[in-house]
Image 1 (cartoon, each protein chain N blue to C red):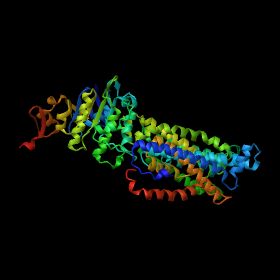
Image 2: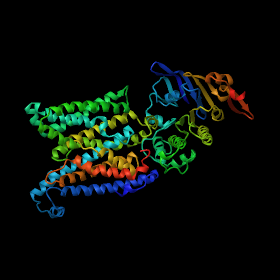
Image 3: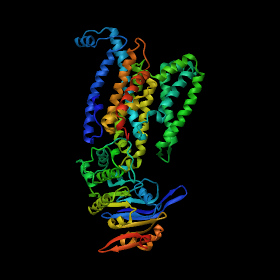
Image 4: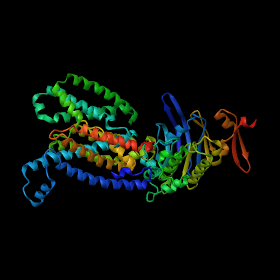
Length: 258
Length: 357
């Protein structure tokens, strides 16, 4: 389980996160959604130990505030919204950095497998800086995957922590990446992802936490959280949740319906 | 140097084997250059006669023995250590600042060392005569070393808040500190007499001349410590190329990495500058050339930079010793005259492939 209890993050005089409680379970894809500036990325950065916070954050048995960087690295991988690379590394070299930092599958080279999982088979010898933005983001995802390759081992589940993993991807790769996340969860791992696309979230998330103004407004299964009034209040615009047969949910802005 | 002609953009595995082969060639080149430097100089010596005499167990004549063992060998040792230290420190600084143009000067080492040397040269006469006599020629190196450490400590303290060191603050504070140090140095130079100015000028151009085993013994431990510590930074520096958050996510204690990197560079460059004066150029060009040929992986870059840095400085010192023999050129001039155009040539050849560097 990945948990946050009364997590508060201050930046100067502002409380960016106000006593947030949050829980994600292994075996599930948990999405964090909410409008811009609601604190989604800050919550993620607190969970990964990147910002100072009061309260408690735990990944399995690890206390995020106290655990050593390498202890955390062996249990969770983190994909940021953007990762700049300073020197002319190849795709393979970057993916290997991920594998070298985790504890999973160190015996065999996972580069090709990890790249194939993100749809970049054959890209290993390419120079990272020659790739498009979407391809670069998928290389970073392959690196994170190589770090936490086995979703579940004797010490428990591993975690994928993803900040807007599909933001720079085309629709086919959005689905590919979300399916990859779901497969990781079904194999016993845990996934926490900040999402902007509510329809992709409805399609792939098992649980969702809706944030607004530095708080988690509500958390639970998608069908419980995605309601017209709840979403409309959080985002400050009229939204309608539709359920199409057999049971797929899609959300439309109200303006599109009139 | 055939490695330089290899195309870039190949896979990690091929680059790794290329890097290992490059190490082999560089070791061979290092041995050859070292041997050559022992027998090239103002006093012509035949390596064959020397070896024959040694092998036959004959007494080598005293003059040869003194030139080889007491003049050229310590100078060679110093050149190898200084060259390796400057090049490796360049790699570490570039990795730390995530910028291929960073050099040890950015953390205040060079400015501090320069100020120390200037203070010693200009104000050394104010020391109590007994102390000045006891320190002798060691005064300038000791002052340079102290100056480099002092400025590194000040910069590190300025850039560290709440246990976190900001590399960007360090860079900016380094510029401010360099300006301040420049002003103090300028004032002292203004006060200096002609003899002191001459000493200063030659110090700033760098030289391996006057190397003795005593000097080597004094400077070697810290340079060796830096050279031995550097390879342990390789994995952390590789991860840091993806930024501080990504490095942390991959299990690197970034704060420890920064601290060790800065201390390593201060130890290696502080003692290198103290014994050889201002030798520029190596710290940027050597890592750059190697990145173009074997890639940016620090596990190979650090070791190969040490080798290539040692080779280039030893070669430059040979040139410095022979072109105007029996006089000597300052090695800084040789480095600039040979290195500058060579580096430009590499840049022009690679111009189309420099994106992302």
